[in-house]
Image (cartoon, rainbow, N blue to C red):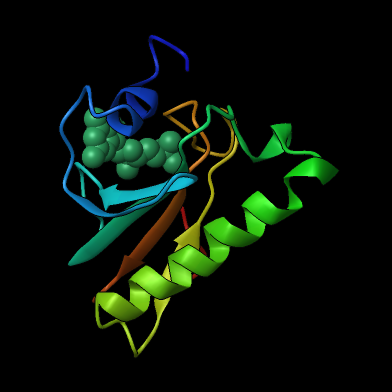
Length: 114
Ligand code: DGP
């Protein structure tokens, strides 16, 4: 755990969040600043700074994150589609330094993103 990491604090139950799923490996909670009617964040409980820090040993974890993203999208009723986003690093728009997958839906998405 990184003491100054907000998502570590959420994962430890030390900061409140609207949690929609949790197990030993992952947590899913609602984004504080939603970009659509549904906006969830899927995180590993273990502190990983970003996608760029993952290695071959993290293949199962990465699979779990993406499969969980699809599962929570189903639970949210996003049958017409949804957007998954992983922002990485300052130029990638990452503002919280703990790996997370955005799941955004409930409105028509546009492309390209800003
Ligand atoms: P990113 O910019 O990709 O690093 O996304 C970080 C997201 O995290 C952003 O959409 C806002 C959200 N966020 C930041 N702090 C908190 C928090 O304390 N609680 C919750 N639920 N979401 C947060």
